[in-house]
Length: 250
Length: 258
Image 1: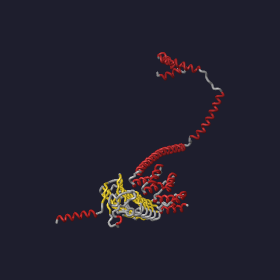
Image 2: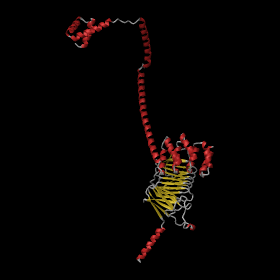
Image 3: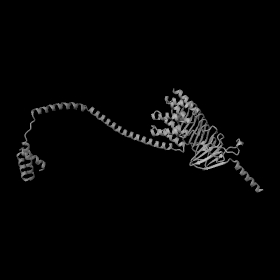
Image 4: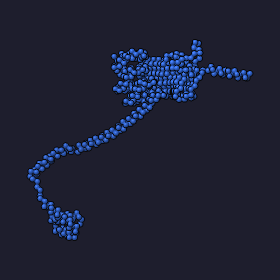
């Protein structure tokens, strides 16, 4: 009886291990992580490994493709079992997806001193999410929308068609630069933040919480606002062409 | 009898100007004192030589010339004297005060010049430090935010030199990160009235491939009322690879500039 229950427990644990998303680890506590996949969630953690997991749960399987492998124009193989290729070269770890249109949903845990760079051009993508990070984050996107939550910066974010939403941690680090051509830029931060802020939009509007006392430098150009918050500090640059800019209180 | 007094008495003795008593006194001294006698001999020689010298009377003509000259000189100097020396004391005091003020002024000016020079040197040093800081950050290939920070440092520079302009132009045209390119353009636009910067900006309009930077460049050209770029804008509009947002901005630019 006792032996039987141990066996059952062991089987359950093994099954749980298999069912739990697959994992791929790279030992790295500094340098750069370059992410070239259409859909991703990146989170900070205290370890010294970059950990990739797949969050794909129910996804339409292509029965015709069973037993075949996805062939990539860069000549890359799936060396992770997650539908992505991870290559380490010197200080840089590069991640590519193998399929063209069907971006896998990947979650990546990164140590806090790794610079995270997201770059994606194709329109077949989803959102790029970044959570609980003190890392430096770079985003260079065409269609992806970008969501940042509980991040300190520094941030350099660009998207052409997507929008950007950022909820900043109180311990902000500059510079913070966000630009979207067609989307909106929405940022929430404490009103006590000391900053040199620039906000601009060509064909949109600019809104800010009344809690922010912005000492605006008067200028003729109606597209641009620049001024100091709480006497000045970190540079924050929020720019849109067709979208609106929102500055919220956190 | 000290030498000086003796000498005087000897001269008078030779000239025969002494009283009887004094003469006897001198004669006694001469007998008693060898040195006095020697001195007497010398003086006698000199005085005789002077007496022997023919008295030189200036010619009448020379004398007259000299007198005329003297009169003229006296007249002239009297006139000058009037203009130089202020007669009432008040003017002299005023002159003294004026001199004091001028002197003080010059002193102040000199000290101000030197503090200005020090300030200029301090500014030059500050600029050099800022430039070193900027160049150090701007070269960081690992971190876009460090490069962005470097470009932001450039915004604090009042007068951009060639080196700064070149570094910013390189960031605007070549940087892998759009935000860095955009910030470099922003920094350069501050100096757009300088010919070299204007040239860099005009060149960038036809070479720039980053749509976000293209839009910002076109907007800057419109603000600069740069009519010469209409042809470049036309090319951007006709280029199939141009993004729609960029084309729209270029159209709008052509309308505003022509």
